[in-house]
Length: 298
Image 1 (spheres, rainbow, N blue to C red):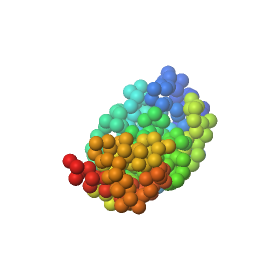
Image 2: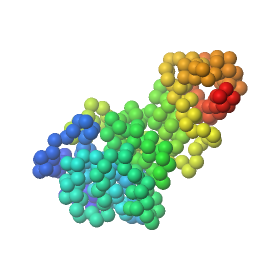
Image 3: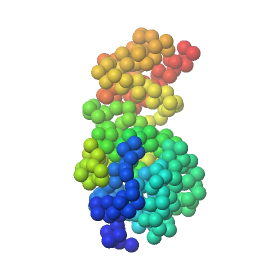
Image 4: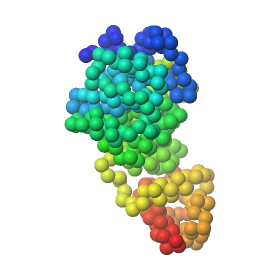
């Protein structure tokens, strides 16, 4: 099928027609902003590297603009929509696409592993492709990464500032605990900038399409992931504070100042540095040493 056919959902005219036809009012509480630019829709789909032997999991399909493009490219599409009002709309507009499965539910609660096993069995690869609501971007992305679901790529359109934080490098103002977490599990790449003017209704911020290529193995070796991420978050707790002061605040009762100074020295890390200057391997070394101290004191 031609993705730029007359019946394409992702245009301002068609979107307004569908909203009017079904009497839909958009819910700010669900972050509903519908993309109405076909070129950007195609950029999102192309970034996922889909073909007829691969599957796509879509989160928040809305009225199906991106879903339609995915259905014409991927072998199978499963779309998870939280808004019950949109389920009959999706079932109607996507009726010509038998390779699409609509799932009503909250993606933070749906058993995604079961969905992947049941619906995508036999395909050569699965990617997440989504226009994510801004308010719940980070919880969704971290669930997809931390559960180590068998995805090739996560291609998402999200708030521009959040995408920049995910892809930020050490030493930059955007680099933080989210950067470390996302880059531990994946290789992020900014794909396209998306102005606020191509949505109905227009959001208050611009968006970015980012691709997270899932890693087969983390770039560093650590023994305790939970403790590693606790240390990372502690180092960024107050950006203007030094590593020493942030760590003292986070690990009161578990390590005194001299022990922390010793740990930092053994890792070759100046205690007056700040979290945004540390490379991932330095966080790994520091968390490993602090874990040894914590275990020795327990």
